[in-house]
Length: 103
Image 1 (spheres, rainbow, N blue to C red):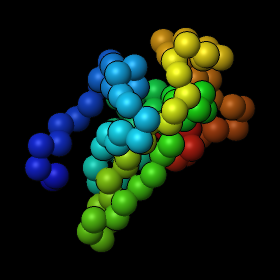
Image 2: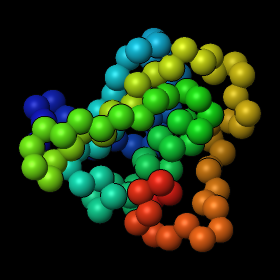
Image 3: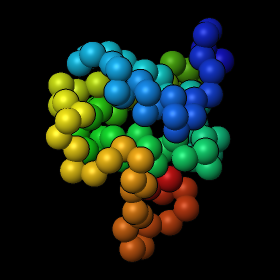
C-alpha cells in the first residue's frame, strides 16, 4: 500500500474536484482498480468528471501488477458543467461489468 493512501468515497472525489487547483493530482485507487474499487461508485464518478473535462486520468505502474490511478485537475471551471457532478454517468448499451471504461 502507498503511505498515507486511504480508500476514497464519491464525496471525497467531488470535494477534491471542487477545491483543487489546475494541475493538482489525486491518487484515487491503488492496485488492480477494476477488481477492488469498481463497486464503490468511485470509478463512475471519476469517469464522469473526466467526461466533463474536469480531470485527466493517468496511471503510473509502481510494481508489477500494482498501479496508481491518478486524477489530474484540468483548468475547466466548475461553473460550466454540462451536467451536475451529482448526476450519475449512464453506461452505454453493451457495457459489461468489469469493463475498465465503464466499471
